[in-house]
Image 1: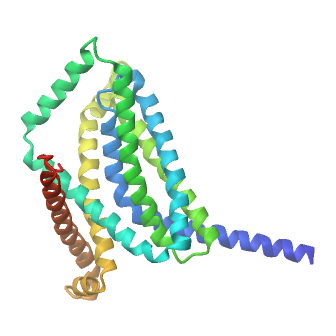
Image 2: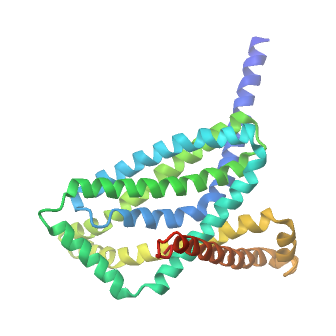
Length: 303
């Protein structure tokens, strides 16, 4: 009997791990839309930091991200246990916020001229070069801002993951959310650390022979394009994921979108429908936020 119980326990553990692995994969796909923008955004957070402080800053933000997730995961599990009806509304709020972020980025790009962005960068460079500037305080503020941004993005990831595991046993919910939280943190900030040091790697390779020097020049040329590509992909994914959540959460809208194309083109109809809905909802939220800020006397649009 003891042997049978042991094998039964091992089978239960193996089944649990298999289920957790499957749920984690599904949750990872659901949250992938956040990651593209997360990578670019967090890499941009350390711009302006001196080269020898880039990795310590990334590590400080990663620690803050782990603290964020240590707060968010128990909160998500509590919601799943005591307020399961709130999961769908929270997912819809998360989806609407994703769409808002995407439209906000587009609005900033098209409503702010390149001269304004260049002037901001020049002002930042002058401030950092000024001996009176408290660089330590500036760095701490930079880290705090990045951790606040991470809290929002982490909340989106946890809420989306919670929607995937909402009907699973509690043990699987705990394991899956913890795995997702840790994996996303390691993945995002590991890549951010690599991205912010690509230019240093390129500079180092310049003095290592003709072949490696050519590769180094290629890295120096490609790094800005990589950042731009991540930002574009992240923005598109925001509309796909955020709009997709809203489409699937509203049955009438889901039926309308799926009815626009034959069965073999359903994936295209879903993708295009999600993007259109995402842009539309994001624009409405941006208008509402801008009007609210102006009514409060802020006078500045959200972007």
